[in-house]
Length: 341
Ligand code: NAD
Ligand code: DAU
Image 1: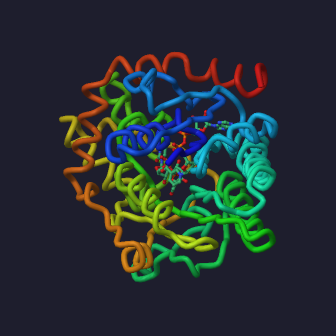
Image 2: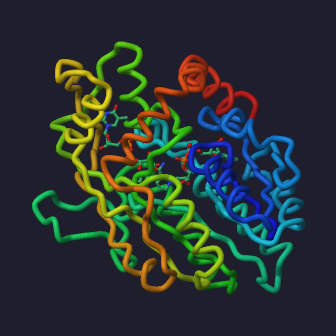
């Protein structure tokens, strides 16, 4: 099986490549990535040059390029996206371009090369498309039947991409499947997201900026569990279906921060209370029953606090990686977004 993976140089994508090469000997991966600020070829330096991995530097908005690539593969796993909520509040434009138009471009290219709909397309999306849940109703969870109610420019753009993906299945009969996953953690996450940001700040002797009252809740899942679920959907999922992926592991940001401080041997004085994120979603939590009962998936690497401990240790052990990323990130971001595209 030859997979076209989009966004493979980012956090989840690079872990996906490594997972597939390790666990699926018969598979090969072509990674299409335009290397925005969060796409880093160093994330895959250990597999670069191997016979089952090919990197293509290009944009998912380039219809001719993606059409050419789709002719050579058996299926598509689409992860490329602008992924950070705070950035979408500063400038929503790249989010609409990459997430909505990018997804539509890929689907159009696939239609061109595969009129008989033989190739599967897994669209990797987020639980944020459902909006948020109240803190005082712990029994309420997101599932595949929850109505869409996105609240940030990021989640709205992902919701738009999900709708396009759904429409291409309904209208053209394409083998599209959508996944909606909760918050991931693990190696190679860009240190703008809360866990790597907090851990690396603490190593640098800086405080950790906790938004608002710190009561917001996220459902944390190890990235390898996410990628295992994506593979399960690719291999066993039903066309036109949607699958929610979660860790059954809800933590408030304050609880998460205390755990990180403890693991790093730091005190409460390292927390800096800062102004809340605009429109900050209160709680995300997933009911992943469908994935378990229909495809036999359950998280096996996300047990808390061991999973968090392993992630924290990775950043402690890989200082060269994140120092390089932190120092060059913003310059590279603007160059890529507005310069060389
Ligand atoms: P990331 O920002 O680390 O990586 C995104 C990758 O996509 C980067 O390598 C970037 O260069 C590439 N990319 C962006 N726009 C592109 C374009 N126009 N053409 C080609 N490449 C482009 O993001 P991530 O956290 O790895 O997320 C991957 C996917 O998973 C996204 O679709 C995101 O919405 C989804 N997701 C993320 C999480 C999470 O917790 N991180 C949870 C659920 C779903
Ligand atoms: O739920 C899935 C989503 O999880 C993915 O779709 C997104 O791509 C991914 O970025 C993530 O979104 P969040 O907004 O939940 O992740 P982030 O790491 O930015 O923030 C997690 C929580 O921590 C959130 O409640 C905001 C808070 N936070 C974040 C940062 C960066 C802080 O308190 N301080 C911070 O500096």
